[in-house]
Each structure stands twice: as C-alpha cells, then as structure tokens.
Image 1 (cartoon, helix red, strand yellow):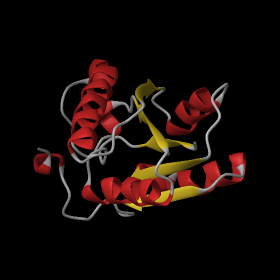
Image 2 (image 1 turned 180 degrees about the horizontal axis):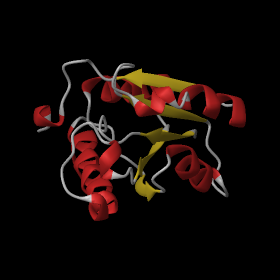
Image 3 (image 1 turned 90 degrees about the horizontal axis):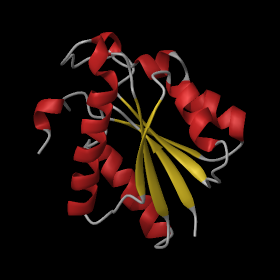
Length: 147
C-alpha cells in the first residue's frame, strides 16, 4: 500500500485536488493519503481571515474541513497534520521518519501562488526523488466556494 503526502492550504478542498487524489486512488485502490496543511502566516494568504496569531488555528480548521469533504467524496484521509509555516520545512519535518511513495502538492494559479514562486513542486521532486503530482486550483476557485 502506497502512502501519499498531500500538501495544501488555501486549495485544500478544490475540485482539482479531489480529482487528482481520486485519480491516484483509481490507480492504487489501497493508496492512503495524509494531508499536510502548513500553518502559513496569515499575511501570506490570498484569502486573509484572522490575524498573525491565528495561522495554526486557520490551518487546523482547513484541515478538518478537508477531512470532511474528502470523506464525503469517498476519499478518506488517513491523517491530517499541521506543519511549519514554511511549506518546505513542513514537508521536511513530515517526511522525517515517515515513508511516502509520492506527493500531491496543490497550489493557487501561478499569478497568485507564493508556493510556485518558491518553485515548491520542483524543489520537493529534486530533494526526495519521488513522484510529485502538482495540482493547480482553477482561477475562479475561492474559499467562498467551500461547502
């Protein structure tokens, strides 16, 4: 059974992410998914809600919302973890001691994505030598679309 680390924050319930995870699950019905939501500082978020001290609470809330949406769509998450504010550090911390078969990294579109400006998908692929499925949320996706 392969375990995949799904890394997302603002796009944690985007239809594109759910479709990508389902696609992996269709290829490997025993695949497990662990969601990692970095506690991104509020000032770096496109959809700013809360203050700087709410980063972990915001990440936790999004993780739990994702757990419910994934379950409702038939893709249960094995676990949800909240990581460091820097996505690279959050991934490094999570991968230490946990074997993963690959990554699913979900970002906003290029013109809005801090993670793409950091070149996160390429950095993770180069660092770990594992498959990285990069998912881009539709430009019209917003947290207002969340169920």
